[in-house]
Length: 361
Image (cartoon, rainbow, N blue to C red; front, side, top):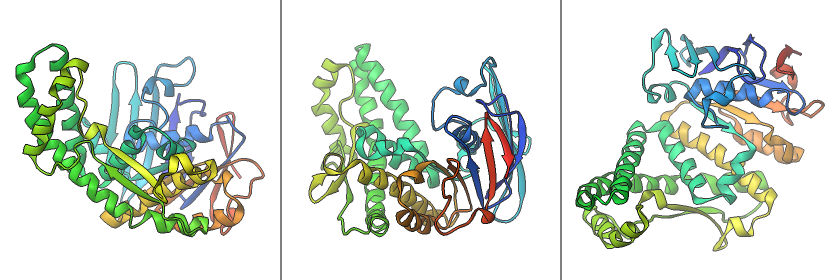
């Protein structure tokens, strides 16, 4: 799968235009604040119907405008072309693939597999447990629609149970406990399996790129510890019910699970340097790419936003070698920066971006 062309209108600071992207590597060169990341955001929005930078679609509108339009022509691995467009306005967000309107965003997210590398990814390592939960849930949702459905269902039931606690409808709790336990156990089981598979990929990738012999790995700490059945989880929910009532919220469940990065029996977020954590966050994304390929046999599109700046040229080369296997990649670089260590600009379609205008170099 790859983008052959991308069009935009009233999106961020980008010029209203149509850009050819028919290349395996597309390089966007420009100073900070010129629109490189905005271009990647447009691509990501076309893939998933939402931004990786903001949960509010309205902020993606160009200044003084209240709507935006994105379009693309994409080509599958079987060389079948299709069209995609997203039209956002305050009244409606319309998404169409080959003219057919998409009502549920779930239909869109399995259309174009896409992984973005950004500076904010370091929060997977040093950030709150929520950041790591989001990463692993995102990884599994990319290839498993049933897991995606379970996450949706769990959040809906959790919201209902918390509302019952706040409104003091305690008679409903037993019903919500059953639903939460059934869905939550499936998610917990899948997360445990995911971490085992991830630990078969991540440590060796990290050591290869960093030239270290670290024993860095992920430790999964479920909130419902030692609960392997629906009945055990229901008992756990009942055990905490008085505290739930006092706090007006559900204090246990998969929404409280922790994924901890461990090195030498120590939490890596406390012991690792900023450089080590930054590199680990990049390897997280490579491991995500490898996991997706292993599960589906398909190659994702990569959006790589200025994250290579912090790697020396040798480490950059090792990183890019492990990055091999994508269907298409978009890179952003600063002017005069050496793009790659093992590729030349001639291998890529290169654009200069200035004040939102894209000019082919």
